[in-house]
Length: 170
Image (tube, rainbow, N blue to C red; front, side, top):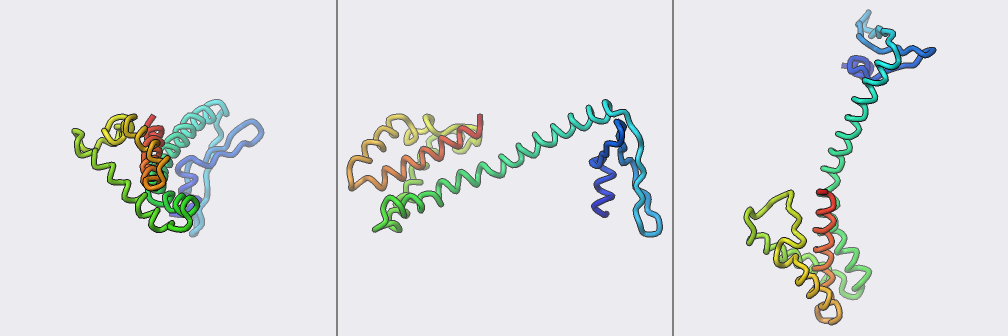
């Protein structure tokens, strides 16, 4: 099926001609070539129909895009962004800092305490014990001690990542 045939059969190609609209209604193969048959329609009917369906298509494609983008951003912040932070905040030991930040993913073990263990619509910030306000306060306090600073940055980045994931769900 050629691109033109798909375009015409799905009524995507609409052409405006002198306040009337030509709508592709059929494709007839003639000697290996595709001949397009157009039908004149009143602008209000065709535009109303196409604005509604077009708007629905745009909304649905936006929802699909967000469904694809959301895990990319989430896991990018969990695994890629710690390397950027480690490189700029701890340039002498950036690899060690990155590994420690990756190990802060272990705070997700508190998900094992919840029933069900995984709920895609649940916001983990404020729900799980290691994602609570008290835990976040502890992570902020750990920033002030050089020995625990890398762990604190990793935990706070983890909390931020889970929090921004909650924003996608709204």
